[in-house]
Image 1 (cartoon, rainbow, N blue to C red):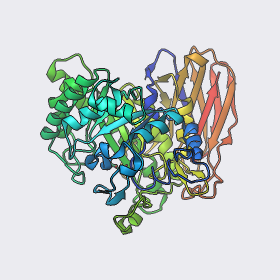
Image 2 (image 1 turned 90 degrees about the horizontal axis):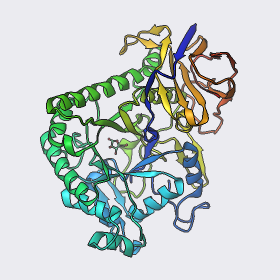
Image 3 (image 1 turned 180 degrees about the vertical axis):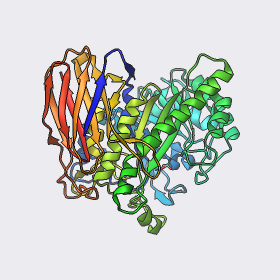
Image 4 (image 1 turned 45 degrees about the vertical axis):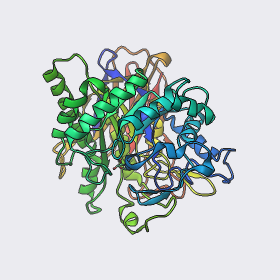
Length: 497
Ligand code: AHR
């Protein structure tokens, strides 16, 4: 099979906001405890932060990390996680029915974020709390000094403000599982009032309102419209969440269908954009609301196990999906989808980062990387600059859910500062290789500086034995052309300068 990707420097989707390569740490399961924080572990620093995890996260080059939840935030009192550790209360975490010791909180997270080289995407509790607790948190984090909350921060050891720019107004407030679930009107009104108070403290912050926690929720669509009707003028982004699972039989048709789920994400994103713009038109405003896909991933492997987990444990093994090779292929294609929608998706968080539905796993001895680590690492490190409109000629296939899935998913990004063009491409054909060409119009690039392929594994194989690796790919250039043979079921990256 042949496929041609044409790219032209004048055909740009958008400048890429690197926050689309964000991730998420929730106080859930072993994400924090035994994940990023484990006093006494061999690599832990004087504050209990695991240096092996810090090094692993740095490889992923994660620009922003959402914290502290997730469902957890809707019942969380952030004040429990500040001040002397021996005075912090042990609480029932009602979201996940575990015990939260509060030995890790705001300062510990911000200290970790600094070491990792990332910024915070801080969520406030609009489930069981409200306007003033959110405004107080902004004051605690961002106000310089001379007020109750800012001086308490200084007293707790942080003289300069944390200066957190991006804030989430609650989490999944449409979900029946959420503690403090609201109707769209109730939430939209509360989000607007909280936004006003938070901005009164610091008018430089950016705010994300909750959209739908899934496109499958019956309120999807009406929720977005009603929420934005209430808070449009005071927020900057609308969130959306999407998780995927392989629920069918292990037959080839189901694999074809699974690998086409990027089409579902594309439709979801475009649907939410349409609603945002419809509200914009009705409001006759020039302001555009962009999207924060602040939870996305594959999540289904651990469901049965989690249903059996006894409640009220500290840091139990929860949501510990072990990802296989087909999951990595889907994650690669979802990353390409983010780039294709980078004109409107400005923040996205792979949910999550460590141990909980995560690319990085830990045990007492060290860390290991899941299959999904590899495409995420490559796109976050090299998908920089401008996303270029992919003009593609490629055959498609039909599945149970999708009418036309292209066998090749591909996109190129161009980083002007390095004069570097990076091509991400995935062959979804189960048996045939693709003779792939990228035609470059008006690019002054000549040499392949790196080309890798991720392929050759059984689709159900995982990386618990640590054997999965990116392998070299033979890619050649001619004037205005890059060529490679893409193996069946392969994720590929080609960098040209
Ligand atoms: O990421 C796991 C959970 O998924 C989050 O806590 C919640 O927001 C979503 O339902």
